[in-house]
Amino acid sequence: MTFLNMMDELKYQQTKFQVNQKLQTLISNEGYILFEPSFFEDYEAFVLKNKRVKKERMIKMIDHDGKILVLRPDITTSLMRQIIPKWQDRSVLRIFYNSTIFSRTAMGQIDTIRQFGVELLGDGKKTADLEVLNLISNVFNLFNLDYVIEVSDTRFLEGVMSALKLNDQEQSKFKDILYRKSTYDLNKFIETKNISKDTTQLLESLFSLQGELSMIEDKLKSFALNEQSKLAFNALKERINALDDKKRYMVDLSLVSTYDYYDGILFKGYLKGSQKDVLSGGRYDPLTENYGKKIPAIGFTLNTQEVIKEVLVYE
Image (cartoon, rainbow, N blue to C red; front, top):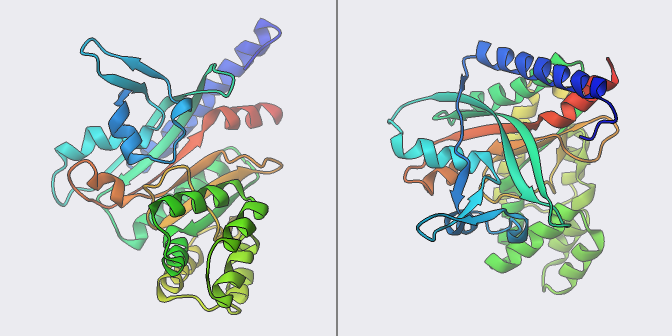
């Protein structure tokens, strides 16, 4: 942030301290332990595991051995590289972090985003998903923020892509279209595929499958879903209905993340009046397998800079 005078900057720094202190107290009281991620990632390894992340946005450097490194663009990936090789079977680990990710803007400048995140590892039960989702509500309620959480299950779209018989390159293109919410590009994509009328109708309606759970459930009755998509939606429905504050949770079945390592429940959080998410996360069991052992894993990351701005407005 840019400040016109010192008093404004001091007020921001004081609010930043208070927000971080409240977050750490809340999460610590829930049994989570602070963990500090490393700053650097191997460039080739990171790109291989995160193919849809824009390479030009990464901040690269070369170490004394000539190896290309990237300044941490994603904290979850960094944590798994540190934790999984030391994993002990039947462990359940609750950790949190308060750190920074780095990227390069379209103008070539270095951008930093402060993130507070939570990871629950080793528990694949439905109760773990509910623990993390309820914790998200507690975080927003801690600051009396007006928010909404959009949720989906990645296996719903995997069912759709299975019906379309897309190869890896086509899947990546399809996900990019959904990520950008481009109706025009989605329609052009549909035109290039020889697909059934039922599947075409589902694809054309994909961006409208967003809203309250009961409304989405009614809409889906009009479509012929395959078994994978049906099971995914039922799992999502079960979790939403079990939440403490479910009125804050909206379904978005076209929801896609920048990262492809999510498998299962996926979510993004928004503050009232903003179209940019301030929170994101989900279940990412497949990511852990890349580091030697597949274990259950779910978590979220919160953009604390946006939360601090919102808290300042109402002070």
